[in-house]
Length: 472
Ligand code: MSP
Image 1 (cartoon, rainbow, N blue to C red):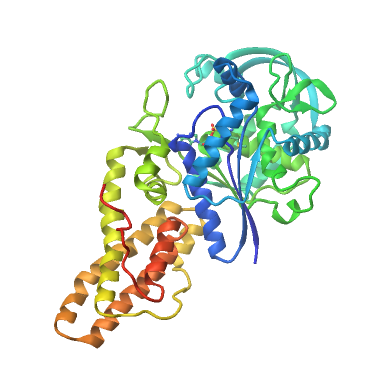
Image 2: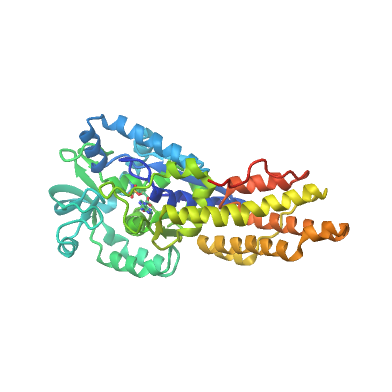
Protein backbone atom coordinates (compact mmCIF):
# COMPACT_ATOMS: atom_id res chain seq x y z
CA UNK A 1 0.00 0.00 0.00
CA UNK A 2 1.36 3.41 -0.94
CA UNK A 3 0.65 6.55 1.03
CA UNK A 4 -0.64 9.44 -1.05
CA UNK A 5 -1.22 13.01 0.03
CA UNK A 6 -3.66 15.09 -2.03
CA UNK A 7 -4.30 18.79 -1.45
CA UNK A 8 -6.78 21.55 -2.32
CA UNK A 9 -6.25 25.32 -2.39
CA UNK A 10 -7.53 27.01 0.74
CA UNK A 11 -10.07 29.72 -0.19
CA UNK A 12 -10.09 33.20 1.28
CA UNK A 13 -12.68 33.46 4.00
CA UNK A 14 -13.99 36.79 2.79
CA UNK A 15 -17.30 35.65 1.35
CA UNK A 16 -19.62 32.73 0.74
CA UNK A 17 -18.65 29.67 -1.33
CA UNK A 18 -19.58 29.87 -4.99
CA UNK A 19 -19.66 27.16 -7.66
CA UNK A 20 -16.09 27.96 -8.77
CA UNK A 21 -14.78 27.00 -5.34
CA UNK A 22 -16.19 23.51 -5.88
CA UNK A 23 -13.64 22.68 -8.57
CA UNK A 24 -10.65 22.04 -6.30
CA UNK A 25 -12.74 19.97 -3.93
CA UNK A 26 -14.47 17.86 -6.56
CA UNK A 27 -11.30 17.15 -8.50
CA UNK A 28 -9.21 16.35 -5.45
CA UNK A 29 -11.97 14.14 -4.05
CA UNK A 30 -12.11 12.15 -7.29
CA UNK A 31 -8.35 11.79 -7.13
CA UNK A 32 -8.41 10.64 -3.49
CA UNK A 33 -11.24 8.16 -4.07
CA UNK A 34 -9.53 6.77 -7.14
CA UNK A 35 -6.25 6.27 -5.28
CA UNK A 36 -8.13 4.54 -2.44
CA UNK A 37 -9.89 2.31 -4.93
CA UNK A 38 -6.45 1.36 -6.27
CA UNK A 39 -5.43 0.34 -2.75
CA UNK A 40 -3.49 3.41 -1.60
CA UNK A 41 -3.79 5.01 1.80
CA UNK A 42 -4.78 8.63 1.18
CA UNK A 43 -4.85 11.89 3.10
CA UNK A 44 -6.93 14.67 1.61
CA UNK A 45 -6.41 18.13 3.05
CA UNK A 46 -8.77 21.10 2.92
CA UNK A 47 -8.66 24.39 4.76
CA UNK A 48 -9.34 28.07 5.16
CA UNK A 49 -7.15 31.05 4.27
CA UNK A 50 -8.06 33.51 7.01
CA UNK A 51 -5.39 36.23 7.02
CA UNK A 52 -4.50 39.09 4.68
CA UNK A 53 -5.69 42.53 3.77
CA UNK A 54 -8.81 41.67 1.87
CA UNK A 55 -10.34 39.72 4.77
CA UNK A 56 -9.25 42.34 7.27
CA UNK A 57 -10.77 45.10 5.14
CA UNK A 58 -14.02 43.21 4.63
CA UNK A 59 -14.46 42.57 8.36
CA UNK A 60 -13.83 46.26 9.09
CA UNK A 61 -16.32 47.27 6.40
CA UNK A 62 -18.93 45.02 7.99
CA UNK A 63 -18.11 46.25 11.48
CA UNK A 64 -17.30 42.76 12.80
CA UNK A 65 -14.28 41.58 14.80
CA UNK A 66 -12.01 39.85 12.28
CA UNK A 67 -11.81 36.55 14.16
CA UNK A 68 -15.60 36.40 14.46
CA UNK A 69 -15.90 37.23 10.79
CA UNK A 70 -13.61 34.38 9.67
CA UNK A 71 -15.19 31.95 12.14
CA UNK A 72 -18.52 32.49 10.47
CA UNK A 73 -17.20 32.26 6.92
CA UNK A 74 -15.22 29.12 7.69
CA UNK A 75 -18.32 27.47 9.11
CA UNK A 76 -20.06 28.09 5.78
CA UNK A 77 -17.20 26.55 3.81
CA UNK A 78 -16.98 23.49 6.04
CA UNK A 79 -20.69 22.83 5.49
CA UNK A 80 -20.26 23.37 1.79
CA UNK A 81 -17.45 20.82 1.48
CA UNK A 82 -19.53 18.18 3.27
CA UNK A 83 -22.52 18.98 1.11
CA UNK A 84 -20.40 18.16 -1.94
CA UNK A 85 -19.81 14.66 -0.60
CA UNK A 86 -16.09 15.37 -0.27
CA UNK A 87 -14.33 13.20 2.28
CA UNK A 88 -11.31 15.12 3.55
CA UNK A 89 -9.11 13.75 6.28
CA UNK A 90 -7.50 16.99 7.46
CA UNK A 91 -8.70 20.54 7.79
CA UNK A 92 -6.49 23.53 8.52
CA UNK A 93 -7.32 27.14 9.33
CA UNK A 94 -4.49 29.65 9.03
CA UNK A 95 -5.59 31.19 12.34
CA UNK A 96 -5.12 27.84 14.14
CA UNK A 97 -2.49 28.34 16.82
CA UNK A 98 -0.68 25.18 15.75
CA UNK A 99 -0.51 26.41 12.17
CA UNK A 100 0.79 29.81 13.29
CA UNK A 101 3.47 28.25 15.45
CA UNK A 102 4.59 25.95 12.67
CA UNK A 103 4.62 28.62 10.01
CA UNK A 104 6.85 30.72 12.24
CA UNK A 105 9.22 27.78 12.51
CA UNK A 106 9.18 27.51 8.71
CA UNK A 107 10.16 31.17 8.50
CA UNK A 108 13.06 30.59 10.88
CA UNK A 109 14.28 27.67 8.81
CA UNK A 110 14.20 29.82 5.68
CA UNK A 111 16.13 32.69 7.25
CA UNK A 112 19.27 32.14 5.14
CA UNK A 113 17.19 33.03 2.10
CA UNK A 114 15.35 36.00 3.64
CA UNK A 115 16.50 39.64 3.64
CA UNK A 116 14.98 43.04 4.40
CA UNK A 117 14.52 45.69 1.73
CA UNK A 118 12.25 48.55 0.80
CA UNK A 119 9.34 47.85 -1.50
CA UNK A 120 8.10 50.64 -3.66
CA UNK A 121 5.49 49.55 -6.09
CA UNK A 122 2.02 48.25 -6.61
CA UNK A 123 -0.25 45.80 -4.83
CA UNK A 124 -3.59 44.21 -5.69
CA UNK A 125 -5.65 43.43 -2.60
CA UNK A 126 -8.03 41.31 -4.69
CA UNK A 127 -5.18 39.03 -5.82
CA UNK A 128 -3.18 39.62 -2.61
CA UNK A 129 -0.21 40.08 -4.90
CA UNK A 130 2.68 42.49 -5.48
CA UNK A 131 2.48 43.80 -9.04
CA UNK A 132 5.53 44.51 -11.21
CA UNK A 133 5.86 47.86 -13.01
CA UNK A 134 5.60 46.01 -16.32
CA UNK A 135 2.26 44.47 -15.35
CA UNK A 136 1.07 47.80 -14.02
CA UNK A 137 1.78 49.36 -17.43
CA UNK A 138 0.28 46.46 -19.38
CA UNK A 139 -2.97 46.60 -17.39
CA UNK A 140 -3.21 50.38 -17.33
CA UNK A 141 -3.02 50.43 -13.52
CA UNK A 142 -6.21 48.37 -13.05
CA UNK A 143 -6.40 44.71 -12.07
CA UNK A 144 -8.14 42.89 -14.93
CA UNK A 145 -9.49 40.24 -12.54
CA UNK A 146 -10.85 42.55 -9.88
CA UNK A 147 -11.45 45.73 -11.87
CA UNK A 148 -9.85 47.74 -9.09
CA UNK A 149 -6.93 50.19 -9.34
CA UNK A 150 -3.66 48.84 -7.96
CA UNK A 151 -2.58 50.37 -4.65
CA UNK A 152 0.73 52.15 -4.31
CA UNK A 153 2.92 50.77 -1.52
CA UNK A 154 6.13 52.17 -0.15
CA UNK A 155 7.23 50.09 2.82
CA UNK A 156 9.90 47.95 4.38
CA UNK A 157 9.40 44.26 3.67
CA UNK A 158 11.21 41.00 4.09
CA UNK A 159 12.02 39.25 0.83
CA UNK A 160 12.48 35.61 -0.11
CA UNK A 161 15.42 35.22 -2.46
CA UNK A 162 13.78 33.39 -5.36
CA UNK A 163 17.08 33.75 -7.26
CA UNK A 164 18.57 31.07 -4.95
CA UNK A 165 16.16 28.47 -6.37
CA UNK A 166 15.28 29.53 -9.91
CA UNK A 167 17.56 27.11 -11.68
CA UNK A 168 16.40 24.12 -9.61
CA UNK A 169 12.72 24.98 -10.05
CA UNK A 170 13.20 25.42 -13.79
CA UNK A 171 14.85 22.01 -14.07
CA UNK A 172 12.15 20.37 -11.95
CA UNK A 173 9.41 21.77 -14.18
CA UNK A 174 11.20 21.03 -17.44
CA UNK A 175 12.01 17.47 -16.45
CA UNK A 176 8.53 16.83 -14.95
CA UNK A 177 10.10 16.04 -11.60
CA UNK A 178 7.35 18.45 -10.53
CA UNK A 179 4.80 17.78 -13.24
CA UNK A 180 2.75 20.84 -14.14
CA UNK A 181 -0.60 20.00 -15.69
CA UNK A 182 -1.99 20.77 -18.16
CA UNK A 183 1.13 20.67 -20.30
CA UNK A 184 0.20 23.94 -22.08
CA UNK A 185 0.58 25.93 -18.86
CA UNK A 186 4.21 24.90 -18.46
CA UNK A 187 5.65 27.40 -20.94
CA UNK A 188 3.76 30.27 -19.39
CA UNK A 189 4.95 29.28 -15.91
CA UNK A 190 8.58 28.93 -17.03
CA UNK A 191 8.40 32.44 -18.49
CA UNK A 192 6.98 33.84 -15.24
CA UNK A 193 9.67 32.04 -13.30
CA UNK A 194 12.46 33.44 -15.51
CA UNK A 195 11.10 36.98 -14.99
CA UNK A 196 10.29 36.56 -11.30
CA UNK A 197 12.05 38.96 -8.96
CA UNK A 198 12.62 38.02 -5.33
CA UNK A 199 9.25 38.13 -3.60
CA UNK A 200 8.17 40.24 -0.71
CA UNK A 201 6.98 37.99 2.12
CA UNK A 202 5.89 40.41 4.83
CA UNK A 203 3.89 43.58 5.45
CA UNK A 204 4.51 46.19 8.14
CA UNK A 205 2.09 45.80 11.02
CA UNK A 206 1.29 49.50 10.66
CA UNK A 207 -0.25 48.66 7.27
CA UNK A 208 -1.78 45.31 8.11
CA UNK A 209 -2.14 43.77 11.54
CA UNK A 210 -4.10 40.68 10.52
CA UNK A 211 -1.38 38.11 9.93
CA UNK A 212 1.13 35.82 11.60
CA UNK A 213 3.85 37.84 13.34
CA UNK A 214 7.29 37.52 11.77
CA UNK A 215 9.42 35.69 14.35
CA UNK A 216 11.89 38.07 15.93
CA UNK A 217 10.31 41.17 14.41
CA UNK A 218 7.00 42.18 15.93
CA UNK A 219 6.77 45.15 13.56
CA UNK A 220 6.03 42.86 10.59
CA UNK A 221 3.42 40.23 9.75
CA UNK A 222 3.82 37.51 7.17
CA UNK A 223 2.57 37.97 3.64
CA UNK A 224 -0.67 36.03 3.32
CA UNK A 225 0.63 33.72 0.58
CA UNK A 226 3.65 32.63 2.60
CA UNK A 227 1.32 31.81 5.48
CA UNK A 228 -1.25 30.10 3.22
CA UNK A 229 1.14 27.96 1.19
CA UNK A 230 2.68 26.63 4.39
CA UNK A 231 -0.69 25.04 5.25
CA UNK A 232 0.09 22.05 3.06
CA UNK A 233 2.95 21.21 5.42
CA UNK A 234 1.67 22.39 8.79
CA UNK A 235 -1.49 20.30 8.51
CA UNK A 236 0.54 17.11 8.22
CA UNK A 237 2.64 18.09 11.21
CA UNK A 238 5.70 19.77 9.70
CA UNK A 239 8.19 20.36 11.16
CA UNK A 240 7.80 18.75 14.59
CA UNK A 241 5.58 15.70 14.03
CA UNK A 242 7.27 12.81 12.24
CA UNK A 243 4.11 12.09 10.35
CA UNK A 244 4.87 14.54 7.57
CA UNK A 245 7.79 12.46 6.44
CA UNK A 246 5.60 9.60 5.31
CA UNK A 247 3.14 11.88 3.49
CA UNK A 248 5.37 14.46 1.88
CA UNK A 249 5.91 15.00 -1.07
CA UNK A 250 2.28 15.42 -2.08
CA UNK A 251 1.10 13.06 -4.82
CA UNK A 252 -1.10 15.79 -6.32
CA UNK A 253 -1.93 19.40 -5.51
CA UNK A 254 -5.07 20.88 -7.07
CA UNK A 255 -5.24 24.62 -7.74
CA UNK A 256 -7.03 26.99 -10.11
CA UNK A 257 -5.04 28.34 -13.05
CA UNK A 258 -5.15 31.84 -11.50
CA UNK A 259 -3.02 30.71 -8.57
CA UNK A 260 -0.67 28.34 -10.33
CA UNK A 261 2.02 31.05 -10.37
CA UNK A 262 2.21 31.04 -6.54
CA UNK A 263 2.35 27.25 -6.48
CA UNK A 264 4.96 26.97 -9.19
CA UNK A 265 7.32 29.72 -7.97
CA UNK A 266 7.02 30.76 -4.30
CA UNK A 267 5.92 27.35 -3.08
CA UNK A 268 8.78 25.33 -4.64
CA UNK A 269 11.23 28.02 -3.47
CA UNK A 270 9.96 27.57 0.09
CA UNK A 271 10.21 23.79 -0.16
CA UNK A 272 13.73 23.86 -1.58
CA UNK A 273 14.76 26.34 1.10
CA UNK A 274 13.49 23.88 3.71
CA UNK A 275 15.35 21.02 2.05
CA UNK A 276 12.11 19.25 1.16
CA UNK A 277 11.07 17.51 -2.02
CA UNK A 278 8.78 19.19 -4.52
CA UNK A 279 5.22 17.92 -5.03
CA UNK A 280 4.91 15.23 -7.67
CA UNK A 281 2.13 16.96 -9.60
CA UNK A 282 0.53 20.39 -9.71
CA UNK A 283 -2.85 20.11 -11.40
CA UNK A 284 -4.27 23.46 -12.45
CA UNK A 285 -7.90 23.56 -13.47
CA UNK A 286 -9.76 26.16 -15.51
CA UNK A 287 -12.30 28.69 -14.35
CA UNK A 288 -16.04 28.17 -14.11
CA UNK A 289 -17.93 30.98 -15.78
CA UNK A 290 -21.60 31.79 -15.35
CA UNK A 291 -23.43 32.51 -18.60
CA UNK A 292 -20.10 33.10 -20.31
CA UNK A 293 -18.88 35.67 -17.79
CA UNK A 294 -16.68 35.73 -14.74
CA UNK A 295 -18.92 35.42 -11.69
CA UNK A 296 -19.15 38.63 -9.75
CA UNK A 297 -21.49 40.17 -7.22
CA UNK A 298 -21.69 43.40 -9.20
CA UNK A 299 -22.85 41.58 -12.34
CA UNK A 300 -25.20 39.59 -10.11
CA UNK A 301 -24.44 36.24 -11.77
CA UNK A 302 -22.94 34.41 -8.78
CA UNK A 303 -24.44 30.91 -8.64
CA UNK A 304 -24.97 29.66 -5.12
CA UNK A 305 -23.90 26.01 -4.96
CA UNK A 306 -26.27 25.27 -2.07
CA UNK A 307 -29.19 26.10 -4.33
CA UNK A 308 -28.02 23.52 -6.88
CA UNK A 309 -27.21 20.82 -4.32
CA UNK A 310 -30.40 21.27 -2.28
CA UNK A 311 -32.53 20.88 -5.36
CA UNK A 312 -30.67 18.17 -7.27
CA UNK A 313 -28.40 16.46 -4.75
CA UNK A 314 -24.60 16.31 -4.44
CA UNK A 315 -24.04 13.73 -7.16
CA UNK A 316 -25.92 15.77 -9.76
CA UNK A 317 -23.70 18.70 -8.84
CA UNK A 318 -20.55 16.57 -9.07
CA UNK A 319 -21.76 15.09 -12.35
CA UNK A 320 -22.05 18.48 -14.00
CA UNK A 321 -18.80 19.89 -12.65
CA UNK A 322 -16.78 16.79 -13.38
CA UNK A 323 -18.17 15.91 -16.78
CA UNK A 324 -19.45 19.11 -18.38
CA UNK A 325 -16.88 21.41 -16.85
CA UNK A 326 -13.60 20.48 -18.48
CA UNK A 327 -10.81 19.58 -16.06
CA UNK A 328 -8.34 21.99 -17.60
CA UNK A 329 -10.18 24.55 -19.74
CA UNK A 330 -12.56 27.32 -18.70
CA UNK A 331 -16.17 26.18 -18.89
CA UNK A 332 -19.56 27.69 -18.60
CA UNK A 333 -22.34 26.96 -16.12
CA UNK A 334 -25.89 27.72 -17.18
CA UNK A 335 -29.03 26.38 -15.55
CA UNK A 336 -30.23 25.29 -18.95
CA UNK A 337 -27.15 23.12 -19.56
CA UNK A 338 -27.33 21.77 -16.04
CA UNK A 339 -30.98 20.79 -16.29
CA UNK A 340 -30.50 19.20 -19.68
CA UNK A 341 -27.62 17.09 -18.38
CA UNK A 342 -29.70 16.09 -15.36
CA UNK A 343 -32.73 14.98 -17.34
CA UNK A 344 -31.17 13.37 -20.38
CA UNK A 345 -28.05 11.87 -18.89
CA UNK A 346 -28.46 11.26 -15.18
CA UNK A 347 -32.18 10.56 -15.07
CA UNK A 348 -32.52 8.86 -18.46
CA UNK A 349 -29.18 7.17 -19.21
CA UNK A 350 -28.27 6.04 -15.71
CA UNK A 351 -31.42 6.32 -13.57
CA UNK A 352 -33.60 4.45 -16.07
CA UNK A 353 -30.96 1.82 -16.73
CA UNK A 354 -30.81 0.93 -13.04
CA UNK A 355 -34.59 0.99 -12.65
CA UNK A 356 -35.26 -1.14 -15.73
CA UNK A 357 -32.67 -3.75 -14.90
CA UNK A 358 -33.62 -4.06 -11.25
CA UNK A 359 -37.33 -4.31 -12.08
CA UNK A 360 -36.77 -7.02 -14.69
CA UNK A 361 -34.53 -9.02 -12.33
CA UNK A 362 -37.15 -8.94 -9.56
CA UNK A 363 -40.00 -9.76 -11.89
CA UNK A 364 -38.13 -12.77 -13.27
CA UNK A 365 -36.65 -13.85 -9.95
CA UNK A 366 -33.02 -13.40 -11.06
CA UNK A 367 -30.37 -13.31 -8.35
CA UNK A 368 -26.79 -12.24 -8.96
CA UNK A 369 -24.13 -13.92 -6.95
CA UNK A 370 -20.46 -13.26 -6.34
CA UNK A 371 -18.19 -10.29 -6.09
CA UNK A 372 -17.96 -8.21 -9.22
CA UNK A 373 -14.81 -6.32 -8.50
CA UNK A 374 -12.63 -6.63 -11.57
CA UNK A 375 -9.53 -4.87 -12.82
CA UNK A 376 -10.33 -1.40 -14.02
CA UNK A 377 -10.44 -0.85 -17.77
CA UNK A 378 -7.08 0.25 -19.04
CA UNK A 379 -8.42 3.28 -20.92
CA UNK A 380 -10.13 4.46 -17.76
CA UNK A 381 -7.04 3.98 -15.59
CA UNK A 382 -4.87 5.73 -18.13
CA UNK A 383 -7.12 8.79 -18.09
CA UNK A 384 -7.39 8.74 -14.30
CA UNK A 385 -3.64 8.37 -13.82
CA UNK A 386 -3.10 11.40 -16.04
CA UNK A 387 -5.73 13.45 -14.14
CA UNK A 388 -7.83 13.62 -17.32
CA UNK A 389 -11.02 13.32 -15.34
CA UNK A 390 -13.45 14.68 -17.93
CA UNK A 391 -12.16 12.12 -20.40
CA UNK A 392 -12.36 9.29 -17.88
CA UNK A 393 -15.92 10.27 -17.02
CA UNK A 394 -16.86 10.44 -20.73
CA UNK A 395 -15.41 6.97 -21.14
CA UNK A 396 -17.53 5.60 -18.27
CA UNK A 397 -20.62 7.32 -19.59
CA UNK A 398 -20.04 5.69 -22.97
CA UNK A 399 -20.22 2.34 -21.12
CA UNK A 400 -23.52 3.34 -19.48
CA UNK A 401 -24.94 4.18 -22.89
CA UNK A 402 -23.65 0.88 -24.34
CA UNK A 403 -25.55 -1.00 -21.64
CA UNK A 404 -28.76 0.80 -22.56
CA UNK A 405 -28.19 -0.12 -26.18
CA UNK A 406 -27.58 -3.74 -25.25
CA UNK A 407 -30.88 -3.96 -23.38
CA UNK A 408 -32.68 -2.61 -26.43
CA UNK A 409 -30.91 -5.10 -28.70
CA UNK A 410 -31.12 -8.17 -26.47
CA UNK A 411 -34.76 -7.47 -25.56
CA UNK A 412 -35.01 -9.44 -22.31
CA UNK A 413 -38.77 -8.77 -22.18
CA UNK A 414 -39.19 -10.83 -25.39
CA UNK A 415 -37.19 -13.68 -23.85
CA UNK A 416 -39.49 -13.52 -20.80
CA UNK A 417 -42.61 -13.51 -22.93
CA UNK A 418 -41.37 -16.54 -24.90
CA UNK A 419 -40.54 -18.40 -21.72
CA UNK A 420 -36.84 -18.70 -22.64
CA UNK A 421 -35.85 -18.80 -18.96
CA UNK A 422 -32.22 -19.84 -19.32
CA UNK A 423 -31.47 -17.25 -22.01
CA UNK A 424 -33.25 -14.61 -19.95
CA UNK A 425 -31.18 -15.47 -16.88
CA UNK A 426 -27.97 -15.23 -18.93
CA UNK A 427 -29.00 -11.97 -20.52
CA UNK A 428 -30.01 -10.21 -17.29
CA UNK A 429 -27.15 -11.45 -15.17
CA UNK A 430 -24.70 -10.48 -17.93
CA UNK A 431 -26.14 -6.98 -17.99
CA UNK A 432 -26.12 -6.60 -14.20
CA UNK A 433 -22.55 -7.87 -13.91
CA UNK A 434 -21.40 -5.38 -16.53
CA UNK A 435 -23.33 -2.60 -14.83
CA UNK A 436 -21.51 -3.38 -11.59
CA UNK A 437 -18.17 -3.17 -13.38
CA UNK A 438 -19.15 0.24 -14.77
CA UNK A 439 -20.40 1.22 -11.32
CA UNK A 440 -16.95 0.63 -9.90
CA UNK A 441 -15.57 3.20 -12.33
CA UNK A 442 -18.34 5.63 -11.46
CA UNK A 443 -17.55 5.48 -7.76
CA UNK A 444 -14.93 8.28 -7.55
CA UNK A 445 -17.23 10.61 -9.46
CA UNK A 446 -20.65 9.78 -8.01
CA UNK A 447 -19.96 8.08 -4.68
CA UNK A 448 -23.47 8.20 -3.21
CA UNK A 449 -25.07 6.93 -6.42
CA UNK A 450 -22.49 4.17 -6.80
CA UNK A 451 -23.22 2.97 -3.23
CA UNK A 452 -26.95 2.93 -3.96
CA UNK A 453 -26.39 0.91 -7.13
CA UNK A 454 -24.26 -1.59 -5.21
CA UNK A 455 -26.99 -1.89 -2.56
CA UNK A 456 -29.71 -2.40 -5.16
CA UNK A 457 -27.93 -5.27 -6.87
CA UNK A 458 -26.00 -6.85 -4.02
CA UNK A 459 -27.64 -10.10 -2.85
CA UNK A 460 -31.38 -9.79 -3.03
CA UNK A 461 -32.14 -7.33 -5.80
CA UNK A 462 -34.60 -4.60 -4.96
CA UNK A 463 -35.52 -1.84 -7.34
CA UNK A 464 -34.98 1.62 -5.86
CA UNK A 465 -38.06 2.92 -4.01
CA UNK A 466 -37.36 6.34 -5.45
CA UNK A 467 -35.80 6.92 -8.87
CA UNK A 468 -32.07 7.64 -8.48
CA UNK A 469 -32.56 11.00 -10.17
CA UNK A 470 -36.21 12.02 -9.75
CA UNK A 471 -37.89 14.25 -12.31
CA UNK A 472 -37.82 17.87 -11.15
N1 MSP B 1 -6.53 31.80 -0.71
C1 MSP B 1 -6.01 31.57 -2.00
C2 MSP B 1 -5.47 30.15 -2.13
C3 MSP B 1 -4.37 29.80 -1.18
S1 MSP B 1 -3.81 28.16 -1.44
C4 MSP B 1 -2.41 28.05 -0.56
C5 MSP B 1 -7.10 31.77 -3.05
N2 MSP B 1 -8.36 31.73 -2.62
S2 MSP B 1 -9.66 31.90 -3.57
O1 MSP B 1 -10.77 31.83 -2.68
O2 MSP B 1 -9.53 33.05 -4.39
O3 MSP B 1 -9.63 30.64 -4.51
C6 MSP B 1 -9.65 29.32 -3.98
C7 MSP B 1 -9.66 28.30 -5.10
O4 MSP B 1 -10.87 28.43 -5.84
C8 MSP B 1 -8.52 28.51 -6.12
O5 MSP B 1 -8.03 27.27 -6.56
C9 MSP B 1 -9.19 29.24 -7.25
O6 MSP B 1 -8.58 29.04 -8.49
C10 MSP B 1 -10.56 28.57 -7.20
N3 MSP B 1 -11.57 29.38 -7.84
C11 MSP B 1 -12.07 30.57 -7.44
N4 MSP B 1 -12.98 30.99 -8.36
C12 MSP B 1 -13.08 30.08 -9.36
C13 MSP B 1 -13.87 29.93 -10.50
N5 MSP B 1 -14.75 30.82 -10.88
N6 MSP B 1 -13.71 28.79 -11.20
C14 MSP B 1 -12.85 27.78 -10.84
N7 MSP B 1 -12.08 27.91 -9.77
C15 MSP B 1 -12.14 29.07 -9.06
O7 MSP B 1 -6.78 31.92 -4.21
